[in-house]
Image (cartoon, rainbow, N blue to C red; front, side, top):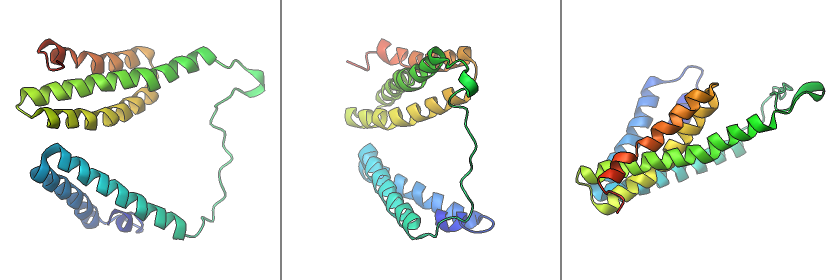
Length: 173
């Protein structure tokens, strides 16, 4: 439904709403039938179906008529300028390594919150496994879009500090 809506000249709000509503309904039904495990299964099925449909659309659609852009993205400096390897390494470390640590902190906080709210051990673990990749992706995107190292450090610290209450109440033991 989303692909059909997005392929029109103007997007159909009705098709968009129906598609996102169907996805939300499937997640809600998965949660009501089997908790976090049911939600995980529903999401995996939805992603597999999207993969198949997008693969088929890519395979069967005609190639585009527009030529690929020849713009440079500024990955390397022009005319032998400074490579700024140190700055690039720090950016990689922030986005790949420290963002993972921060997302794990958010996942631990989500697990602790779920346990404090009365969720079972297995459901709390499933929630933390669900939060980790989402938080990592969001954190990596936010870090890449932020130009200030100070703001990047604050974002990384926020995710890490979020786990402190879970450790304090013993949710990780």
